[in-house]
Image (tube, rainbow, N blue to C red; front, side):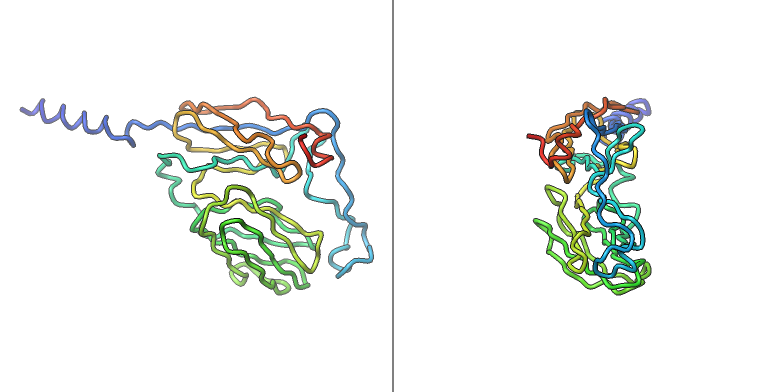
Length: 254
């Protein structure tokens, strides 16, 4: 009788989706092939622009095309699942932080690319001694246009709640300083990343199986709309994703 009970318990555990589920980590890099575009100068130090004492305190370069000259890595590329998988790693079901910080310094947004999950709040602060505004252009979430006072510290900023997942990253601007732009991606799962200064990314805790990612950059849109990865348990290093330098410079993959 005891053997039968033990057998039944073991069978129930093995049948549990959570007990049987395995998880993998996907790592990769987005690199630029062919001609490597150089960063465009936005404005020189002391340029005659609005609030030049802050905005033109130094030579400032555009942040829409950031390429590591040493390894050709492309920063600010979004890699994300278009929709949440049926199973999410139990440690990732809830975001580690309730609030994501969005800053501005010398009239540039920091970070240039941001990911927020539904249920999280983006707090907009400012390290600049001048006023800004944050104007969002989402497709599904409510658009916002809020004033950000000078020298706004963490905990004192404007809070924007992310209620819905978006199909694409959306643009964020400052109407006072029209060159300022950033992109936010709203997702309802933890499987999204932005490439770092070396063009590298890591997405952890994926359920084993085939997953279809989107790879998107503001200059060209989709680099790959259906980046398919067969995730196995453990590490899953991917071959580098390449994008043409000429296409990035032109702003089109066509």
